[in-house]
Length: 311
Image (cartoon, rainbow, N blue to C red; front, side, top):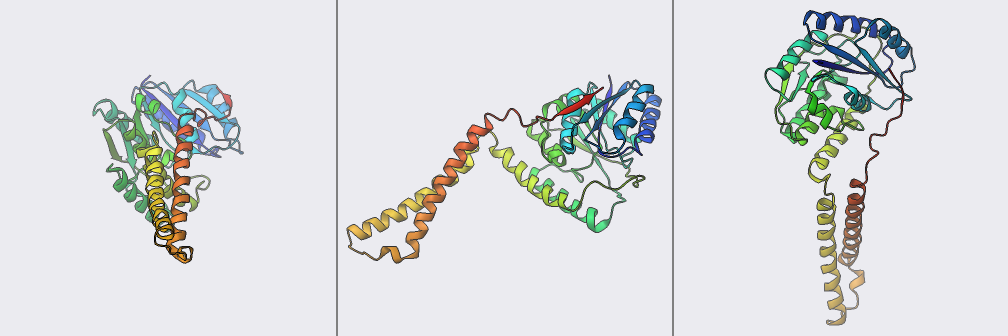
């Protein structure tokens, strides 16, 4: 199979028939074999019923339904697991991503040999203050931190080599930084394509302003994980050891002053309490690193999502 199109969705029953028809039209004209993998992220509208109806007349459709809402990252992760195409395309279900971009994205993967191609919505139809400006800030920050020169890390329209999608592990809200995850997995050729952004036709956006706070925290997490996920003791142990040694040296000084110089008012000095604090802090950091090492070696259920149906 040439292409798998993975589409996570939540309450998008109005747009699904039009989106499916649009995808069929584009890919049938391109003479590419394909499948459409819908992942219903616990919708509480008629999205699943619409998918079941579409599947009756469309042999290209696969679908997964979650028992509850897990988030976009979970939808992508499970969609990648069942996708069979040599090139995997992801897109949103709200008709703001154009299926007309799929043939060019496919060509960039198969002919230009990119591992991953991310869409860039250069001209957006989103509100400037609530979406555009915060997005520009976070994309710039992510680009500086990761060293990947992309303008739009969070664009839902992306293309992957099959082995890339099967290699990366997406959890939490890490779908925002898939290019960074791909780079950490050893895939270096990451490109970008300017794509057309459509105005929203149905429904309302499912994301609020809190996604920017989460996005910033996720960026800190992924930066930390890229360096210390395999050996968290290298961070916590070093920080804890340095803090402990500083505090221990201070307490040795006060002990020497009391028993050798006979200075008995040492406990009234702020430095004494600072020494105690750094010893306690250092011990806690070292134990945190030790526990993190244990957890990192036993985290086999990180992506334990409950799939209710699969067709």
